[in-house]
Image 1 (cartoon, rainbow, N blue to C red):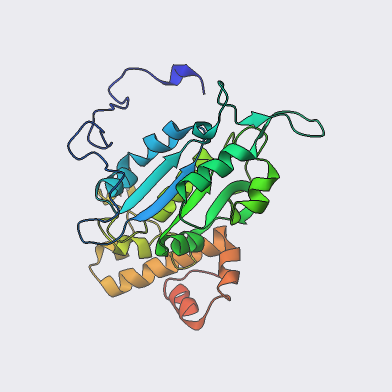
Image 2: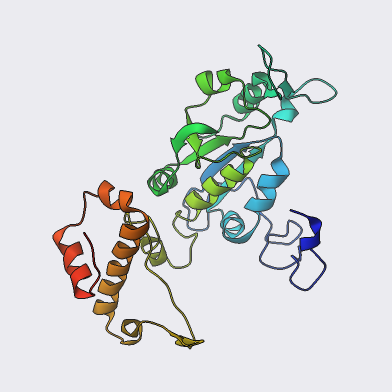
Length: 284
C-alpha cells in the first residue's frame, strides 16, 4: 500500500489512546502473572518469531491487550535470533539442492523451544497444515495453552515440522510473507473464547460458526436509514419470535453462502424447516 493513504489527520492512530496497552502506565502487563484476580490460571500462548515486535504490538491492543492486563491470557514471545551465536544472528541459509530464497535453519528454533519449554501443542504455522476453524479455536481455548512457530522466507527446515512441532496449522489457502499475521488470527480467535475476556459471554454463542452456521444479520439505530427499514420483527418486542427469525436468517444465509456447513451438520432437520417455513424462506 502506498503511503499516500496515511496522514496526520485526526483519524490517525494515537499510541497514547486508552484502546491500547501503554507499557508505561500502572496497569502494564506483567508477563509473570499466571493467575487472574479470580485465581483462574491464565491461558498461556507462546509464539516463536523473528519479528517479536509484531506480535507484542498486537497482543498489547484491544481485547487481547485487556485480557493480558487482567491475566486472563498470557502471551510470551520468543525470538530465535536470541539463540544464535554469530555476530549477524543468522537464522536462515540457502536450501540444499538449490532454488530461490532462503530457508530458516532448525537450530535456533529448536534451541528457543528447548530453552522455554512452551505449552503444547506446539503448532507450526504452514499452508500445508490443518485448516483452522472455530471448533479448533474452542479446543485450544479449553486447554491450558499452546504455542505457535512462525516461519519466514521460503519456509522452515522440515526437521522442525517432523521432529519438533506437534502439528501444523493453516489459516487458509493464501500465501503470506510469514506466520506472524496467522499467529495473530489464532491468538484473537482463541483468546476471545477464554472466560472473562468478552464482557458479554452470550455474544459468543450468537456468532458465525458458533453452532455451525453463519451469523444472522444485525441492525442498530436508526430504525430507518435512507429509506431502508429494520425488519419489523426486531421492533416487535416478541423475543421468542425474534429468536426464531434470527435462527431462520442464519439458516438462510448459510444455505446461500456456505451450504457445505449445512451438509456438515447433517442437513436441515424438522425444526430448521419449520423456522424457514414460518418466515417464508425458500429452500431446497
